[in-house]
Amino acid sequence: LIGQSPKIFGSCIFSRQVSAMSDKGTSNHSEVTDFILVGFRVRPELHILLFLLFLLVYAMILLGNVGMMTVIMTDPRLNTPMYFFLGNLSFIDLFYSSVIAPKAMINFWSESKSISFASCVTQLFLFALFIVAEGFLLAVMAYDRFIAICNPLLYSVQMSTRLCIRLVAGSYFCGCISSVLQTSMTFTLSFCASRTIDHFYCDDRPLQRISCSDLYFHKIVSFFLCSIIILPTIIVIIVSYMYIVSTVLKMRSSEGRKKAFSTCSSHLGVVSVLYGAIVFMYVIPDRFPELSKVASLCYTLVTPMLNPLIYSLRNKDVKEALRKILGKKAFLFHSILTVT
Image (cartoon, rainbow, N blue to C red):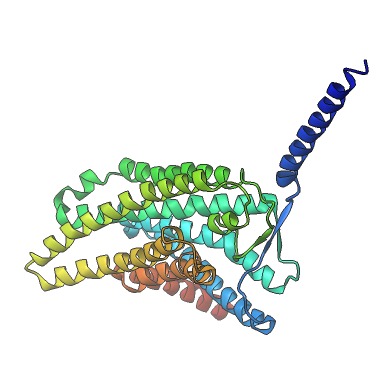
């Protein structure tokens, strides 16, 4: 028994070490119940100004995108593939900006600036879903303009209702698959280093900074996802517009060229802002956190605000439909005042 006691003592020590390591590994995951969103590193007195700016932009997003969807759904003249895609674009812009802006505005007034673990997961999942869906939808819209301008006689045949629904559903499906992969990878990391996220919403790169896990595999998969999302959509957009420009330059009618360029330039403007900010945020090495926040503003708030303005102010059909709706509202209001 005395001879066996060192073995027994050694095995007890070993089992305790394994148990301690196991407890430490689980505590890395279980200890994190919430995160702190740092937001913008500015003086406290500027938080009111930032709150008012966010509130103004978010109000414009709500008004513009809800207005665009209302106009498209109520006017039968806008029952075409292009406006079907525009309506979905407004829905996506409205939704993913609503995932981020309200929480950011609350944090300008909050001292804790905390967000629960479940809310952080939900925010990242929904944002990733809709931002990826928007990328694919913009590629679909480029293809739609290519068919409309390069093959106008076959447009109604090729862009059938069934195909349009499938293309939009495919955009959401790709966004969902990408979001599930990205979110599941991100939140299987260990966050033992810190729970302070140097950003104004839960995003993949800021969460990587506070992780103590090995990020090699995570970064490889993230780069692969970015490549299969960004490259195909950019290629579709570039090739579509190369054909569009070639066709437009061959048009004899100056009015036709002007109308085609007007429609396409607005689309290209949106694509340039969105993809420029996304490439800076997710493809270029993460060395400037504050610049990353500014780039994030471009596609979380600026693009959703500009889309309805660009597509309505530069679109004759939308302006006429909006004028018609406002005219009916004004007539109804005048009739009520006359009766009373």
